[in-house]
Image (cartoon, rainbow, N blue to C red; front, side, top):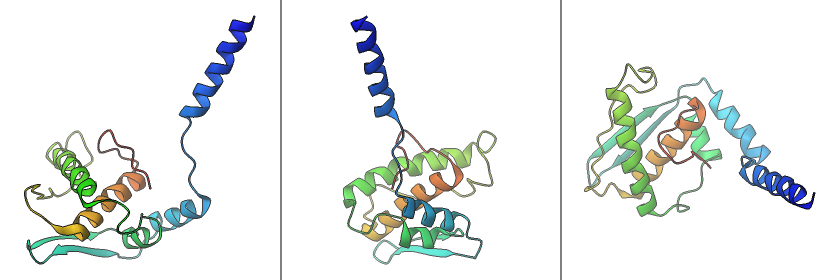
Length: 148
């Protein structure tokens, strides 16, 4: 009887520990507001030294970036570069495989060379766009959960 009780307790602890993390209700409301935004929203990501530029035309992204995303400096540049390298590869694979993935979501390839120093701001905004995109469209661009 005690073995059975121990098993049930262990199973309950395992289920509880595997449950999804809870999001702060204030952040959830701000995120939902950003996702539901329909006004034109353009964010330019550029670096003068590398002549690199991405223009994101995505309703709600700028609002989300300001209100929900982790602030600049939260992630190290190395972390952002490593994640972006991986996420860009997966993104580009989905653009190429437009029969397997929605071509309305994955329209254009991203030219990102890990040997080029794009600076912190480019990497920060690009990474956060990937997080925003994955959360808004319920996509997963790899093994990493898109968390805030």
